[in-house]
Image (cartoon, rainbow, N blue to C red; front, side, top):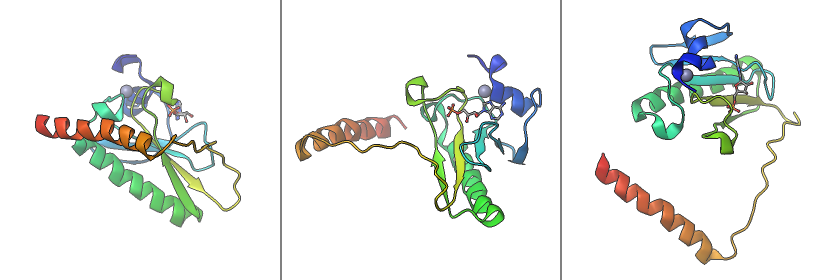
Length: 146
Ligand code: AMP
Ligand code: ZN
């Protein structure tokens, strides 16, 4: 999908309707039309970026600031007891709209919302350390590139 047929780019450009709740120069927050809980908000960068790994740290910082504002507003304005923030990168991770978005979902005691998160096990501590090493070595390489 290119920027031209991206539904969130069209929302940002005002070519598709949306219920906006906040915007600044770089970030837009609007209501999700298929809420997992009422009050579910999406926070997106105004520039088309597909995944978190494609997105500049400064843009992400702006998104995270707005995500915090929305979370606080759900707690204060809707009397939410808590908030889930979730975000998918890539179809395999469940990303349907390929324009970076953070879901901000208000939560209430006994609301029945279920993310179906099932914990698995490592075979032993060594296996967990092997995975940790695969990730950690990339930090060192990426640090050199920046
Ligand atoms: P994801 O599965 O993480 O890519 O989430 C995409 C989200 O976008 C879903 O929660 C949809 O309900 C939401 N969505 C899709 N189209 C629109 C739209 N036109 N306006 C608001 N939310 C939308
Ligand atoms: Zn887009």
